[in-house]
Length: 381
Image 1 (cartoon, helix red, strand yellow):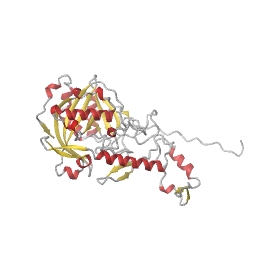
Image 2: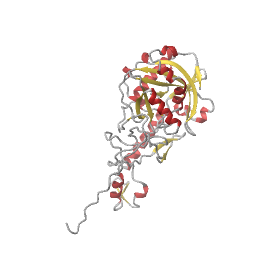
Image 3: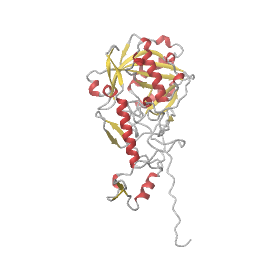
Image 4: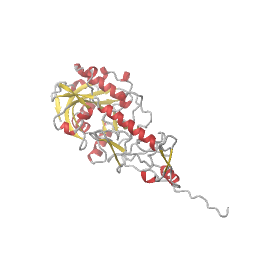
């Protein structure tokens, strides 16, 4: 019709490109409700609301995941004036024309504005802008997605406060302190156990690493959530955590306390029903002693119990704990390790140590693991 202009349709965004895949990992889809109300559903080493870190693949949604709410509008977009609500509090009004621009920006495909919360030693949070990411072909859904349903600024602040309170509580859980011969000498909070300043003074705690194989002899790997305080976004073995200083997990006969802790964490991180991995089916092989820094503040110093399981299990991972997961063959793991050696991805130091020393020998003898049981020696790495 004369006098009117036809709307211009913008060209479609080009598809995301990625490097030739080593493995194809499944996403852990985020949900607002999480996985139940059990406080153990998040590792106390977590910082939630995470953004991608260097060396991790470019995140995107697979199409089936729930859209992630957009970040609150920046302070620059807020007008200088405000109105008053009936309760006397200030209520900001959007400036003319800004609402449409904000909605337009939020609707851009792949526009991820999530900010990462880093917990400092004093318990405060600071935001980091997401860095550039590289391209390993895995499908991720944390910190990105369709942002057309924007969360209000007030709701987002409430979420941040709630996350902070949960982190403070979880970081207060008590780890088991040991000497270099794995003799129990006390207990300390998870926060204090992972501070480099304490590690340099010799603080050492008990931990475990689970390697779970299915009946096709494929190893289950996870990529740690970007919310983790230590080694976020790194690929690692099936499950890594700590027994707690409580009567059930302090019991040392045949490492039953550690195996109970592993059962608990397999449920919390991967959603594996506890009845599918009873402690008697978790094989305790040996121990390693290692130390590694994650950054200038946080690190690890552990006597690490190595646990193996061979079983098909039901998986329902918690996205606050795990960014992605996949089963791999030996050849696929070797390719993954090669990418790590070239800086294309990151893996945890304990997984690197075990892969370089014991893992492939165990893998070749999954039906004869009794040949490798050594409960006397602690391997110093």
